[in-house]
Length: 432
Image (cartoon, rainbow, N blue to C red; front, side):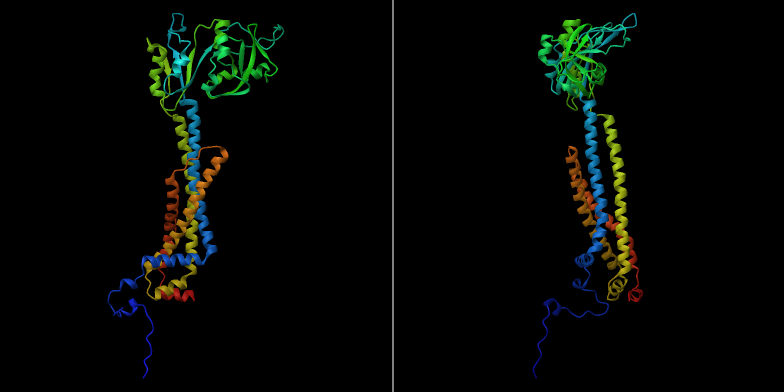
């Protein structure tokens, strides 16, 4: 009799002994973690339309979270930079004053006229300027050379004397024309720069027609109009002359104060150095107003912006988690027959629950990765359009991706528990 050939089987199956009732299950026959992932990912890929809709909720949530946190950090950095530019980068040196018997105050000392080069030699000083109000109690400031007695009298605008570094130090912008330079100051040229408010008041809108302003009957050629200033905004309503001109025409005796633009954080060290540089024999005769550090107001605004964006991000993320939970619950209801079949052939409730949890985690992780990438691109795109410097913490992007998996884990927990409690007989009866 001819023997039939035995079917070809893998060696591990040919050597496997037949299990007896009550004997432990071999490791190769157990439902391993790799099998769990395989089942979870296979079922996810079988429904691409539903996968897209499920992932979309998580993508939107994580994108909103990463983008809002990134935009909050970027916007807060811009806000803090604006506050810092206006508050923590300005140093002012003024002489100390003393009260007289008549109730008035007088300066106990005077700033040197070479205060600007002395200050600019200090580390942390980026630019400096002298500033003084010119005392003209009876002067008339007008653009009309002839005084018309029929016109009602009006208070003249203040007149200030400044050095040529004023715009650079105070963060000023010109509306038209130019600012006077060191040559005008040295030669005591009769030129003037108007603030935007006083220029509107005097009717000066352009300088190419060579307009003049008359101060106490003396004509000064208007060379420019200042549109804005980050500090000392009162100068927008004043007429500004070179210090040399004010000394020659009005006998200005000494500068009123010296103001400097400093690097952020350099205020504490410059507080003592500036007084020594300007009055080495008596530094206590000068008052130095220097910032301690970053603006407290800017820090508070930054914190408020972060809180608002974070709350919005959490709300959107919760919406994504609810979407995952709804889709996972629907999947459990549609796959009751499959669950019953798996339970009937030996799958435990823990394995069924693990499969659905794994599916939710994979969906959440996939949505987190896509959402984190889109969030980073959104921050960079908005920053490029607005001309900002993007600020994106790498841990925020990584945390957003992992948070998607956590949301999937939490959202799939309840549906997975429900699937694990389905009895095989009821599942097979309901699934048929």
